[in-house]
Length: 104
Image 1 (spheres, rainbow, N blue to C red):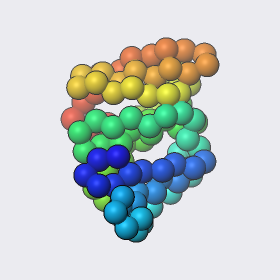
Image 2: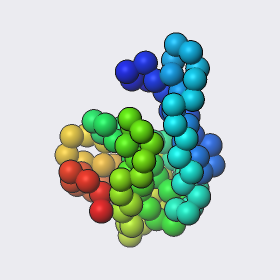
Image 3: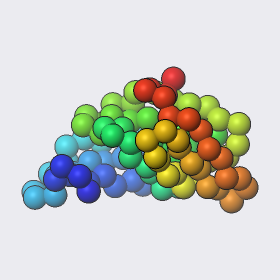
């Protein structure tokens, strides 16, 4: 929850709603990147989403637009973001990636 909004996730969709009214602000379909495989992480105004197909999708928290997709070498899982690193904990690996201004 931040700025009076919250994001929920199902298999391959993110939905952002306002806390006060429960109104849907945006919905983002991520099916082309697989399905969500762990906990999301937030880094400033970005939501980082762990996906099957060994991908992390970067979504703008304000409008739900996909800003970037990173293909990685190992399966991703639950994400933890710090200012400088993205840590992924999956059943098969613990990985750490540098956070850049934008995932490309």
